[in-house]
Length: 551
Image 1: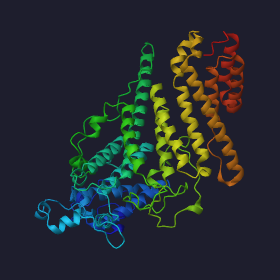
Image 2 (image 1 turned 180 degrees about the vertical axis):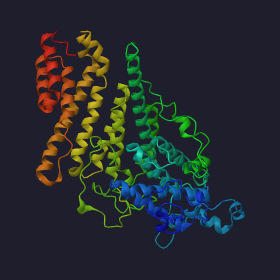
Image 3 (image 1 turned 90 degrees about the vertical axis):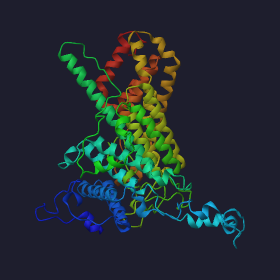
Image 4 (image 1 turned 120 degrees about the vertical axis):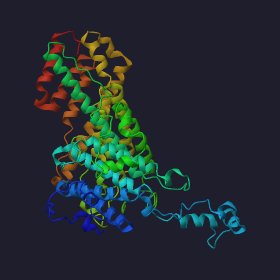
């Protein structure tokens, strides 16, 4: 089957025109057509189709990305129906040849000398080392298919999360359905016989799959936070309407998805996924998990992916992946499409503008790679969840984790290009960490117990907020320099509201009245009219009430 057939399949006369949207359920087998078994040529076409879909997704070209993503899902479904383990189509079986042959059980003198001897070749290298290099040629990872399938489901879930109206009849309209399916696909790939048999000990880790595995878990954690906050507000409003005290009660383990698996039709790719996944599904294990618990699972995958992620200081052959990565430069322009956070809120996912002069000259469907961009995306998405967690301790923990990743980028990237976004992001991290203990001190301050301002917790909070202010001020200076140097580049996200928030919170934790008034004035200058009323109320409370009651 050619690539053109995958993108524009032929329809019977009763079918809609080829220009109409094609559901992921519209596979040839579902229509009763005879289709040949998927082979290596189909695998090569699938990789190119996936690269096109990822490239269009990264370009925010929804009309082009959606049909391509659906085509990838349909083709992956066909592969699964033909081959329960699709790696048999493309994997190099010579490296994993069974050791149960008689020759392996009773080694000959030749094999003893070959396997255990240290004879060297003309270059002086041992024969065993030479053989390992020659047999370890660049090949597809066994999990390559499951990585493509899972990443596509992840991207599809992201698009559905933005706009559920894009789904076609028969397609799930909940983003968690796609994300949970992606996790099941990743889990299936991780448990392939070629991965668990121990026949090959030098198989490279699929770092791309690990990274998107972690990002999928972060999406589910974020959805869980959103769902529980919505339910808590609805409960508070309901209690208020019936005359009861409208208390905001938050249940961290609530889920937007049910624990039981939907009954998918046999023509659905989700039915095929359910056939081959492990018996204990992600849906079952994540249903009662809190957002924090899910983030812990994500961190495990991120740690594995970051550890095995190619480094610009290493040769391109270091840990090859299933998608071409023609460049490993630190330039922001070289970013793999399905790792970008272009579809997140702009305030959360600011990144340097792309320098078109540094774009790769390779095929447009060969996804370039940027280690700094991947690190920035991971940390930004974790921080986006951390800012919305209800527990101050958990907010502090995950903001600290994100800050450590941002801090690592100073050794990975061209800091001239990334300095502004990193400074802004680290300021957000420290704002979360500095504000985390404030909630526990508010009740004491409202009760007039101002001695809490002299506690170790208050001192730690002030230090964190001072760090946030420092980062935001440096980010503003960097943004001003960038605008001056590149007038046509556009203005970066304004950090003034965040800086004003940090100044205001720090003022409320400051015992010295003069310093407190100075911080209020600075916050008002940064925020302008946006916080005028709040600042006036705070300053008035500090003057007319007891001086130390700064609640």
